[in-house]
Image (tube, rainbow over all chains, first blue to last red; front, side, top):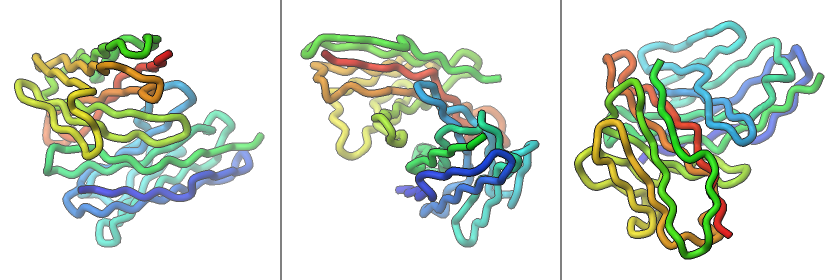
Length: 113
Length: 119
């Protein structure tokens, strides 16, 4: 089955700086890669996703890149703000085997004002 | 957009009793729903895949007789934690796959989550 690794586990940046979170996946059948932001006690919120037919997607301050050959994808947050502080999860969903979304371990992002 | 509703948000039960959590897709018919468990400061771990009209598929290490899943309709899946014990206390969250169009076929929508505390 799919295995997703995520790094770093904790990331601290100064307000206004950029933050990058990296993930790798193992199942070449995965073709959908969502990123979720989870605040304490709340459900994960989808912030951006990318499908395997594109290499990059951007939405305002958030961008995601995908390298299918290397099986890795990254989340980039520019001009970070304190409200970006949360836990971020990457995930991969194969288009076979029941479409199970498998999550990375999570990255706790601290944005210091 | 698609919405998945989960109920209850919080539940406290006594050790040895059972508790049921509901997951509903409000805007679409979900033939497949997923149940996850999240312990504090950990990631979301897939427990089982709920299949409408058939038996759920459980991940390795998850006791199917303890975590009963029923997916009797295209919009409702339930998770029943039977004979709950304090170690079952966790955040349980469901998700549903919107089959939709090809472009959105793998989009996953999450419920609000349910905090279970077993005392």
